[in-house]
Length: 113
Length: 112
Image 1: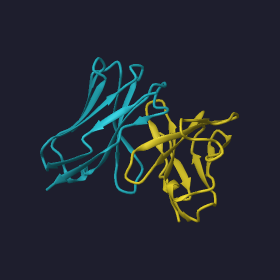
Image 2: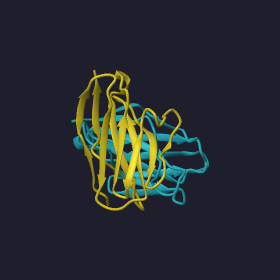
Image 3: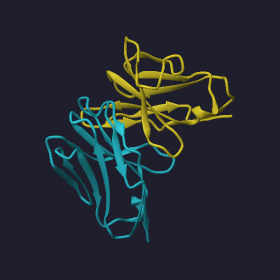
Image 4: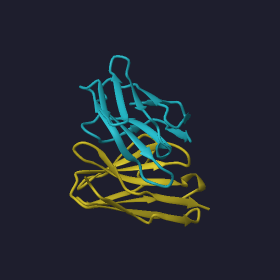
């Protein structure tokens, strides 16, 4: 089955700097790659996603890139702010749409003021 | 979007007992998903709940331990049976929309 590896497990950056989190997946049939942000004690919230027919997607300060050949995708957050501090999860799905997600291990991002 | 309500939000249970978690969605959905998030860990899919048929379990999860009901298109329950401290986790239900997956707020279970 699908396996998703996420790095780093923890990341600390200065406010205003950029943060990059990387994930690799094993199943070349995976076609949907979302990123979730989970604040302490709260449910995961989708922040951005990308499908296998697209190489890059951007939404304001957040961008995701996908390299299907290398089977990896990355989350880029620019101009980081204290409210970006949270745990971020990447995921992949081989099933149509957002069903049966396989999650990475998570990255605890801390933005230092 | 979908609004998902889970009950209870948290519970402390004695080992050897069972807890049933309820998940209600504000719209009809074909499939509902149950995930487990162990302390400080990622989310792992337990099973897919289909209306009118038995749930489909992922590797490492069995029906005797995690029986699931799906009586209609807006509701599902997950039971954690014969609990041990290792079952202490957050359990989340989820539905997949056309473009994204939505999660309930989770049930934080502590087994003592």
